[in-house]
Length: 448
Image (cartoon, rainbow, N blue to C red; front, top):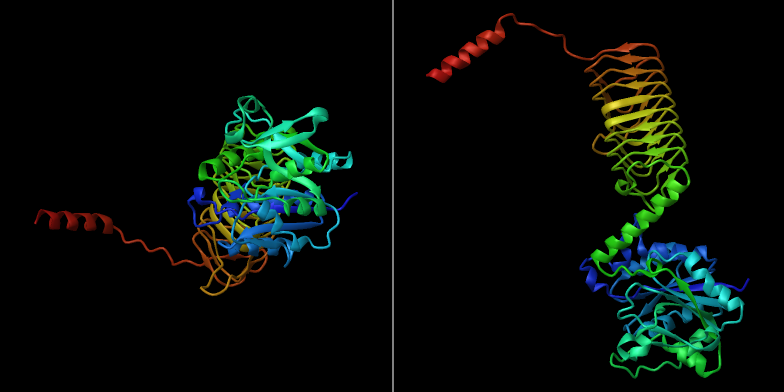
């Protein structure tokens, strides 16, 4: 296979976002748009990926280098159009001999499957391949003017198009593929004799035809090339992403009685046979095994839920939560960096942080793993089949042995031996008649 590379354009100012965060660092499905674009390039088999960034955002360059290596970011300064942006990546691709595809970091829904036809066109003899789409409303999009044999003759901007050309349905997405040497050679001939004084990538089509080269098009869906340039467009892209992911999971056998209320992350894994009730939010890094149930209004992030486990309603699983097979994590229970063993139960109103809960253990309502001493996080261990009474505070580091019990309302700050009962609370004192006398005294004072 011909070697592949990708140039991802990310140098736009993103002023329509009206946000201090660079446009392409906004997230879809819990992952930045830039990362989505890099993922797509890597899924296409691109051995080299260069991200073109502007001088206004060092954060983009840092993210590109963190993902791809020290030479992955190319600077476009000043910004002089899309053609100029692609040329900014030339030095970063020095010595590369293969096909290069130009994509955009603000089109987060564009997949490897959408782009792959461009490389197929290259294999079948096209010198340059352009990705088009057919929007419901072509509006201000550039039109793809095609001639005989499905050859693309030129790209005409809507403002420059004739009435006949405005009737063309196929529009330009901006995504283009060509041999790297040819692409940079064509771009070296692009001028800036236009109203904006910029160098346009689209001009390479006319230049290629002028040389007698073959330019052809492939077509993607309108959603695939949807740009996210404002908060409203970002939300629309999120809606499309969520709808796709829900459909994929349900097609695979996940039961969602109210799918439109479930929010998924880009890497959410849910096995067939699992149930996800309404209003569940999945942050990044969640894996749910078969036959598990995630009940309504729960929030999960960085967690693993084992087969047949029951989570929620109103549960929160934070990073490092490992919920074992058939375990129960109930309403208003928060679990962080804690392993809960097979069949263990924490059914309500508890915090389990930095701990280990053995198989078959029972955590009573109101139990707190007091894991933080102001400086360090400490470990709480609850043994197999241990019983933690309601409203117990376990002061870490502490271990409750297998089969041990704690009395309700206890504060446990020393290890408890297996099969023992640990109690720590003041002796109950009763003062007969005290409450009546108290009320009488209060009433007298109120009258005076």
